[in-house]
Image (cartoon, rainbow, N blue to C red):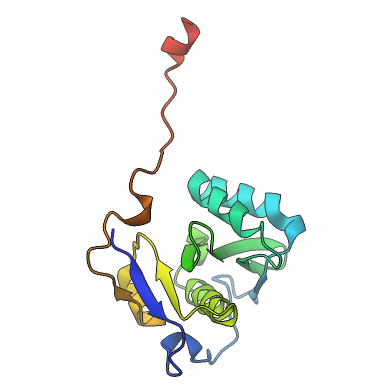
Length: 173
C-alpha cells in the first residue's frame, strides 16, 4: 500500500471547507469531536485494540503520550464511535483513523480526518503523510491527498506481526 501526501498550507484545501450540518450518528445522535484527554487513554486504547488492531492501539497510546494529546475522538454521549491520531508512527504522519462499523458512512470519518489535519496544521506542519493507505479514494476526496510515487513498502516494511501460539508445542516445554 502506498503513502499519500496532504498539503496543509493551501488556503483552498478541501479539508478546510466547513461542513454544512451538525454531525449525527447512524442512530441520529449528536456526535462530539474533540481532542482526547489523558485519563481516557486506557479506555480508548482498549477499544481500539478490541475493535481494530493491537498495532493501532499501540499507535493511539503513543498519541496519548503528548500534551496535549495527538488523538482526536468522536463520541455520542459516553459511546466512543471513532478516533484519529497523528505523530504516532513518525512525525508528520496522520493515522490511524477508524470509525465503528455501525457508524461508517455517517460522515464521522471525514469529520475526524478534517479535524486532525487542521490540528496538524496548527502544530506547524506544511504537509501530512498518510502511511500505508487503504481507502485512497476517501483521502483524495476529503483532503485532496495524492499518492506518493515509490512509497511502497514505506515505513511499515518489516513491521513485526503477532505470531500465532501453538498450544501443543508450548505444553511440551
